[in-house]
Length: 232
Image (tube, rainbow, N blue to C red; front, side, top):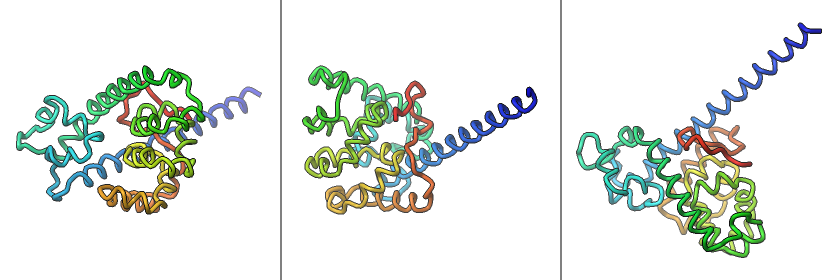
């Protein structure tokens, strides 16, 4: 009995290890695509470099580089512009900064909306301006995964609250790591017309998803601070 039991345990461990490795590979694939693509859509003059004016078009996404001396610290060759390689060396710092800023935003929202400490779907739906803020907050989206998925999948509600819908589609990292929702959102052509700056993102993301049909879950990018996981 001992030998078959040991064999079963070993098989289970190997299977779990394989699944975990696959998940890591998928999260790396998705995360790398997101980082590269957001750089491309910001690079308006196609010189493979970003200046401050280009970053300002996506000031929520690139807030780290527009804060204090972070732009200068990232610009290693001091040419006044940021390359993808220069920014790649600051990814962990960037997303730690983003997490801190978003946690501050959540604290401020909780002071305005005490029910946010234990929110219900009905409470959120009755406060569309609040949801518009939450849809742009990656920290909240990850830590309240099921709740935010339920809201984002209620296309009747999002269509009746266009500000929330637009903020959802500007949350590029969340879209990249939630391909099932992205596929559905991209079917809405009217919203696409309201976000011309994201047309190339949508086109490239749809192409990426067609090339990787196995992407059917939600994923945590490896560069997001390690003290948080998606709450499904």
